[in-house]
Image (cartoon, rainbow, N blue to C red; front, top):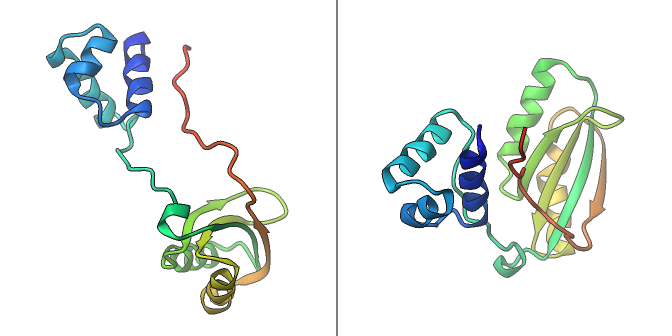
Length: 152
């Protein structure tokens, strides 16, 4: 990855809807050369996809919760069953397998505290193989970012 690739990636992170002509100008390339570079970054998996960032609060989900989950065991079967069940809950926005005292961290969205209580009692408490759950309510997101391309 060279300086031009890093310029392209930084620009796309800032505005994934930038036109190829504008991106080429920023990178100092012709439009066709820029398109080839972007295509190669996509094919190599450096660019994983293009996404719209949605504002949870404006969509009626004012409560975000981080949940630490400890399973009864760590067999591959238990973990696979837990992960599949967690993926089926639409309010679970992210699931991370972690090292440490807990096994997983979930990021959960809810409309309000009562809605979180409902999601917890109907779905989260029914997740398979759970020994312990601990919820931490997010008061404010300070920042959220993707990895920024840096020089080698």
